[in-house]
Image (cartoon, rainbow, N blue to C red; front, top):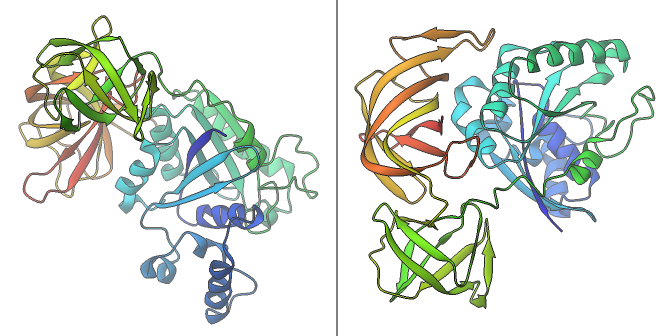
Length: 405
């Protein structure tokens, strides 16, 4: 079975953790000991039935404040597909954690409270999903039980979203009315919303087409470690490699032929992303950690000047001239911020050109100059090699996620 990685996002109290808990519970993916723990915790807090939000909100601070703080990953499977889900925090103060969850997802489930419609944070999450080029988006209009499952209330929110989605690059969108608390249209179709003729959330997750979401054209192998003479290992970021292929090591430019491939201690003739692979070359060439093996006639751009979109979540404002550590694949170098082109207003998506700074949770476009050349693709062509992070050298904290323009 194939694997779908998806993430949930939405504003505070829109029901993300409850939805995931309901999904796991109704799929019978919660172990008996965890169910018993949920029962005890719910009884201790004087709640009727199970509080399914605790299935993913495992930190004490999360349960005390009834919010999601960290990204909670869960694995489950059905007869049709395997899943890795990331329950992302919706609070503005934890935007970095939400970006972490979205960065590896191929589908985003964004929740909205039917009573409130699209608020600013919901718009921010939708824009981030489009910015990260997530191929599939599901808008779950939650808490339909609180409006008596009225079709008109659902249609109003759906129309709001369709008007907003015209301003951003969101293509494959599915809108589903649900009640995460009661389970309507989560795993089973809802008897209370017979006017809705689409699939339940689980059925859509099982059937959405994902086979073409990974770039299998551009061979990109960031080198991680040496395993001996002429043998190097790493995780294929994209594309595929075969025995007999001529490859080039960037940025040095040395060429060699692939003499052997090993995946999970087994020799193979071909390996495809996202597998980890050991590559044996036919000759001695200078290769080191941080280099990238590519095909001779299919190379990324090798450059020091970078034009990128940035999600800034550092505590201090980002200003021109600041120097940060840049991590791209297995390589790292220092980079200086040359210019702030613009910042985005999340309500209108209007651009404020030449801003004095980017403040925490701002999204904008910047120019960088790195000390060492980077092997970059445009993010819209290759999500794996078209992205990088910036780290504050003093605190060693990740302060930005960047997408190559």
